[in-house]
Image 1 (tube, helix red, strand yellow):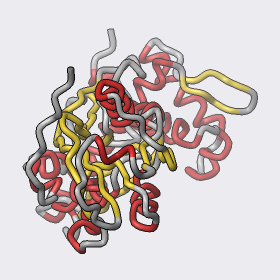
Image 2 (cartoon, one colour):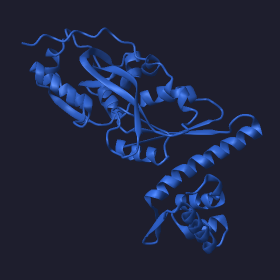
Image 3 (spheres, helix red, strand yellow):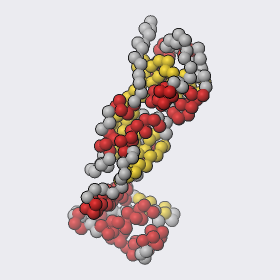
Image 4 (cartoon, helix red, strand yellow):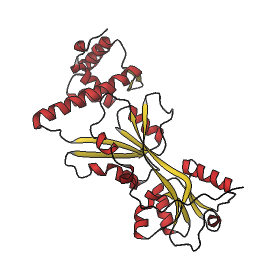
Length: 310
């Protein structure tokens, strides 16, 4: 068994550099060391650990499973070392980077509310990225992201341990650009075209099930995955839109859009997904400690009672 005292951290840093670059020749040139010397030191690290860290695929070096684990720990080790030096030199951390991934369909208004406590802080830099949930969770597991925001919890997309923390939940509303006299849910939604979330959305599935239960047939004008596009269509057409209120928060405040009703029993839930790590990013406490009402910040009307069904 290898003791931690036996690990050569110089070798580990060379491994880390090659793993990030994916090419031995380019890494050797960048570090200004002989390629043979760089290769030798990585082999010595592999002998110490008793595992192969790379395998060749054509001209590329690809991490083995052991290599991926080693890289994850190397990232933590060198990040902690940088924080240590910064703290000792200045008495406080230097610029801290928080990397957040958000599913592409998530409300931009919600994302802005979530990171609001960090905006304007002098030593904080945010990296905000969007994508599909599975791809984002893979990057989270590989330490390329610190947190993923989603509107569903992590399932079994990956083998690694992930924690899904519910941070907010809100009702879903039916909104439109003009007031409709005598609007009543669900009767009135059969009279005008509607803009609905795409069929992969949990909101859409639950809304379809509710309409089926109530015997209402909806006239679908558009099915939209992206909430930012739904916001534009809701504002610029005469159709009704099924959206969480935070998506159209500004338009509701300004009177550009009107909330005709809150759909009874229909919610969107927001999750923060984290990987199990010994050392979580120190900035996460600030954003995860927010109150749900601060994150949503949407004035709300009373929820109507669901109509009785026979």
